[in-house]
Length: 306
Image (cartoon, rainbow, N blue to C red; front, side, top):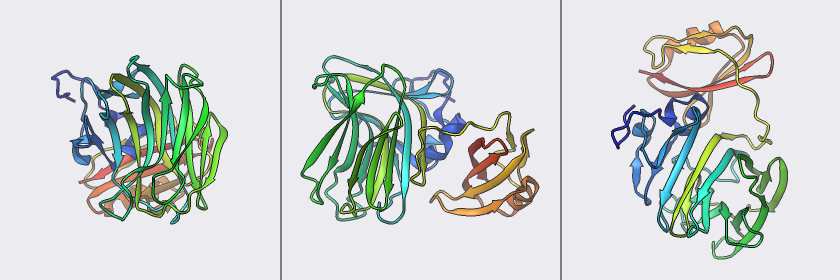
């Protein structure tokens, strides 16, 4: 993988645990313009400064300048009243220069091009280093349909390393768990516009900020802070594939689910051999495969049928 600075680097799309989320995202940087389309992003894209892998399996997001960003923009819109859903992230806000007071790391944003929304975030999760109490993680959300009124909630102190954030939309309520503790539970059923997830760094002030993401995935609204362990030593090959795929693991697989990029389950099975045979009949495209083993371990990965 070649970064645009000409330095070889591991790409976030090569890291299995991020592939499901990346599969329906593009990257925006340094402004709202697209730095990497979905195809480019998922084909080994890195940027030597803004976006690459650190510590072997974590995504670095970095940016400089007021209102600049390096953010994954989920290209799949949804309505929070259509189904329960959730986003989990494990994040370390590694650094903020003194002139960068506030950096946003997660968002729910409306898509004004697809609906009649105010083109504002319903929710921002941010760190502020010049607000009392200092060095805390905050949530700010819109309290009415106009998007003009905000409520700020102190989620807790930045622990100085990785912390867990779960955003859950359940029965029209928005629930935010910080480090496994519920901090917000409010009715946001009035927010009926097509919306999407965002993750990365968005600077509300000058200066520079850097965040590392260790986990980033969506779910069905259930509590996600304690992610299930991944299945060990699993190999799925070839990938991309033309005919069928092979699944090689010493673990006993209890169930398999195959999703399209809209999150719809298109195949379920309890037998690896059945899925291997079924994969031969798949149409060309990108899919997400989820496996669960007898120890309740999980593995989720992107499959590409050519």
